[in-house]
Length: 296
Image (cartoon, rainbow, N blue to C red):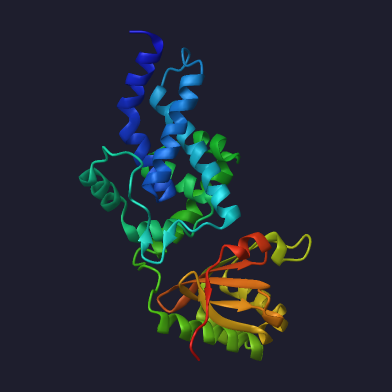
């Protein structure tokens, strides 16, 4: 057996574990398979003769690949979860075992994946690797580029959010309920009502804006109801021209003065509260939205 065959055999021994790691980090089986495949490509190009713990080495590689994918996803604000839950569970290959896919998805839990999707990439990596797979913080720190102490804090914050979201449900898909929440959000902005804004925002709401939507030097990510509410009131001048609309099939907000789409607010609503707001002003991203008219 030559070295490549030996590595291929060892890789196959670790494939199921690597797939489980990647799926918990990414929430998508197809993305997880891409991450595992990338790990094999890196292994096949590397000199692994001095690697004592190949399983640990591969886990680290998959984690780094997943971290890059999560950061790219966050930059594009590509949602891991559709309004109906984590997706997709379809594999690239024709030899996928549906039963294995179902077991994998069930072992993670859809509600947990919803909560994990609210974490930052570094928080998600730290939590999954430590709390689920038992990697030491010293090793995780090298993956996320933080000190061990900072990495411990990442996992701790993630753990609190996960525990707090233990009863989480899927995002609300009832358009009438979505409309009520979005209308309340807009009304609060137009009237400058800070308390009314707090009432419709989840305490841990996350606002992400693309660079085109914020002034130079301003942060593109805000977390927490009070912070997001203050930001909304500061920017409330645009609320006068803002209108509820269907945004990719869910109720959101558009700003289109003169009929030209200028800005989109894409909401994630859960249990009657806004848990995430994606503010999009980049023309290229705006062209990718499907925007529809809502009945008054």
